[in-house]
Image 1 (cartoon, helix red, strand yellow):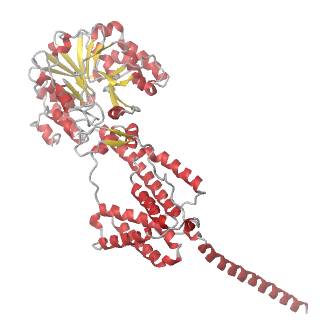
Image 2 (cartoon, helix red, strand yellow; image 1 turned 180 degrees about the vertical axis):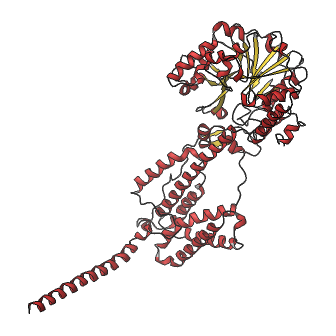
Image 3 (tube, helix red, strand yellow; image 1 turned 60 degrees about the vertical axis):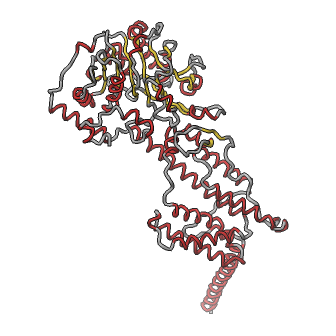
Length: 606
């Protein structure tokens, strides 16, 4: 009897557990539909839908979005999705016919400052491209501050938008996704909700298979019209604008973040392009080097002229065969008398033989060209200078906030080139010379320069053109706290007259190396050491001697170009690069030897 009673009790407990389980399932089945009725289904989406972020009340949400906008804002102008937001605002204003009682039930107008620009002050800049807009908003200026000439190059080389149909499909998809959650909540709009969902899925399928207009199916125009009609009907429905606003804000933030990534990627690739030797120039250097070791018949020297102080001596630091050739050719072609011209090209071991063969094969009227391998010079120089390789003139990109004057936009970014370490070896390399003119390899000479040797520099060491658009006070963040007159103009390399006698008397090289050591210990730059070394020792040349900016400024006046004695392509867009500014390249290309065999074979001048 006990066994039977125990079996009955066990069966009762088992049935009781099953009853509790069934009751739990019944309660759960009631809660799930209730959750959907309350709108919790917005947290679940089909494939391809971007989830809405659950945000706090409007105040916290707006501050969070505004912080993101401020963080990403300076990178890209805000016109990417401005049209969508304006449409949402216009829709809100067009639904003002809705009774106020209905608005009190929860139909919220979007904030009036959804995507207001960071500032309403526009800065104009002159461009050399016809049809380009004259006004640039401040976000473009901030881009220039951050990325330098890349932003100018990108604006000037902006191509006409391709695959416009694909882009329109994506825009429609964004807008449809923004309206769908709100439309789906309205029972009376089930048909429209189903139509929106179907159109969204169709566009998602098309975009998953097509990335260009050429890949789109033939019936795509019908799909576009159907989606346009569905979006137009959605806009005519009184929906909760807060949801649409949140969705558009999320889309904007994601698009802004993606645009920021592409901006940084573009700037990196731009820097890579301007700092890498073009394939054609590398080919030329290799071909010349191989040819040099095949044929020594050209190897001849005119050493008696190299150290004659009565002649006019020019010094060029370069590892670019074509660039140094253009400098020499343009100087000789513009000189009244080429008999007294002597050029000294200082290069490195890698390019020495190519340079040597090039200048032995090519005659420059009666001028003489000496090629020196700086790595084969007297080791004593390097013991003093702690330098055993060629260093070219150093360029610094200086960015600073301009004034409110619209014309000051060009002064937002400047490229200042200064002497490199190798320049401070000049007194030791040319011990028999008293005065030299140093030319950078990114210049073109347009007038006779012989008058530079008759200048009375009044005891100054070097003559240079001053750049008063960049004052030393504006370089405070670069130079730190230094003993400078803040209103003093900065100076540039490019064309420099150097009194080697005065240089040796004042021990300029020793002063420089001492300052380099002190500045490096304090975390300073070579720019600071150079400026301190030549403080109060610069003779200001007339501004018409050199015109700078042809390597980064699209707005240089053509009249100024024609008047200048020397054109300086300072900046990233050098004339021998594909990225060079086309309208300035013509002044450089006309001094190339277009019929040279090696240039043709290496496609240097296509």
